[in-house]
Image (cartoon, rainbow, N blue to C red; front, side, top):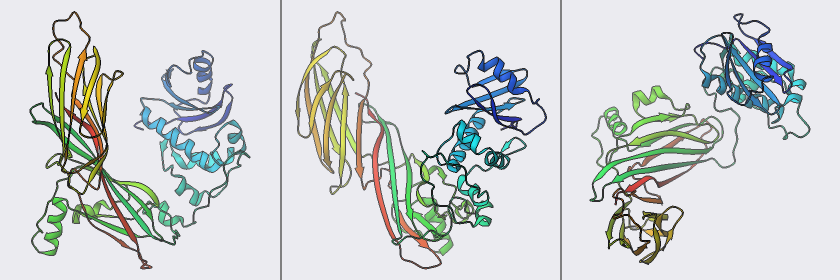
Length: 438
């Protein structure tokens, strides 16, 4: 927060103070009375979660039967304050067995005061990670009899993790079978004119990982990105291998990635969190491979008839196939019915969305499918149908295909015990905003 929190209050629904903590001396101890009088008693709790009274800002949120109120004597970052409240409640729930209400607060007020001293210093938020705080605040909260059973306690090796070196992973993990699952998921965004000219295209992708590895492994991921391959060739003093390379834009990494090593060697090196996480995001604007090409032809036969012809060609490999292909062709609102002829799948008129919906369950690669429809319209008083038509929209999923051409060149795992690992890599491309103008 640009301006720090001066105080935090925990109130019940009657306005009684359950717990309060003053972090700064720029507000008086009776500020909670102003909150009761001007907000709670005037029944304005649900109108706005931020109120200004007497030069102070009150930011409050109701969780179960408890109000958490942050008092700030200035123009604070409201989003940061509410983010702090949400993270703090999640922390308390992890200690209380999943419960956070008035009873849980009364039963654990000593523990809450200890946590409040750790998660906020002089009004500035600090570390709120339950995994790290439980390593050195080992007191267990009083659990409700209806709460979930306690989870396994973390291995008490606080020195390494409290310093932030590997705060996202605890030591001592053991798996009988060490496996790594890596998924590259891409969304293709396309806007094409009726003449086949690409007006806008890009690919947004993310790399998802699921790690079940023992110990504290170090992973290294190699992709066929242009900068990484050139840096690798430079370090090894040899020419770059031929093959398709891609340029990644707007890359963001998970906190586990070693950014210093990435800046110097252009390799993605990291100690992974346990379980599932998102390793990186990226965007590509050049050299996009479109999975489908759509060729629409729409003719108006007078005022009461239309003829729609749509041809769809798949551009990916012949051994691949797309799943859940849906083509939506917009038609006028005064459409009465439509008669179809399709070479694959099924088509129908959906009046709720004013579209001809053509569905193909499985679309093989390097093939084409066509749909012809005769659309009958209800005669209206208007002389001409509207000239602005919504674009054709597509939905699809293509396993083992990437529109960007991104490929995993290697995935290496090092661990001091030297165990063997099994790596699984999958690709999938799906439609984002895939539109073709009529």
